[in-house]
Picture 1 (cartoon, one colour):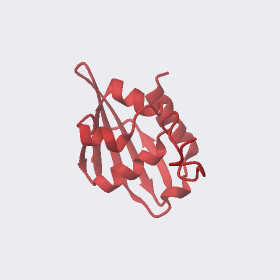
Picture 2: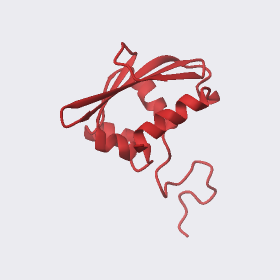
Picture 3: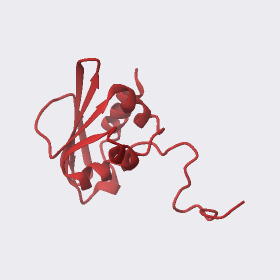
Picture 4: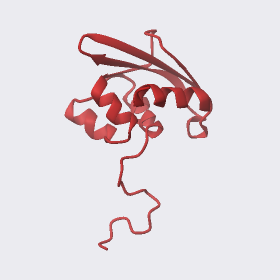
Length: 122
């Protein structure tokens, strides 16, 4: 199983995320790999998450290469930086796309907000 498939499977199993209790919307991931298109549709209704393999309409569409989707699912990339570099294309609600970034694993070695040593030289 690819890291991308495992990521969406985890969302399916979790079913609920309290960080999204005030969020309603949908995000479709269009993942391209040498002419092949894989689509995942994430529907969020006040924190309840439902994932399907569908190309249906969505509030936000995120277009990304299969290689980049794998890196995202492994927590190896910063989504905001990738959007600014054009590695991730977003059509629709950018705020929702940025919020969805919270679902992906954190970058290896990235300092957490609550790290008391953040910003200090060690």
